[in-house]
Image (cartoon, rainbow, N blue to C red; front, side, top):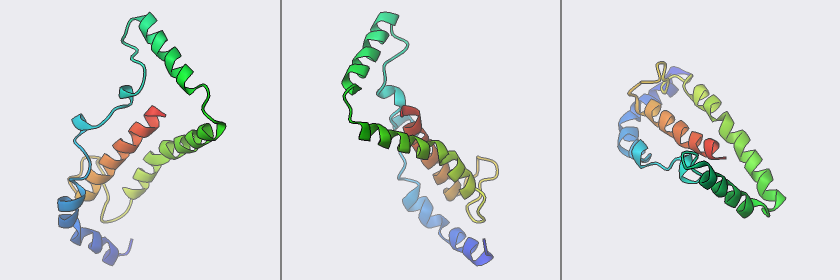
Length: 121
């Protein structure tokens, strides 16, 4: 990235800290895939009943829904690649995965949020 473009990102760090970083929810307030799926820690019979009920509810989904789900899975599975690519850009680079740069913090939060979608699918 040309230095003048990297400087633009650097100049926007205070803005990103103020307006972008507050957008993601704290991890403990985020939904998790297990909120929507049968609980495998339940007794076996109860867990199996939940799985069967889920299968019953989804048995008649139109094929188009399944096509969309597959497409979404492909996109969600590729998200770490996108985050890795963003981390190569000057001005937003997160070389350690622990950078305090607002851009690095945001890409990690976004990657985690999107990863939950893939886990659920």
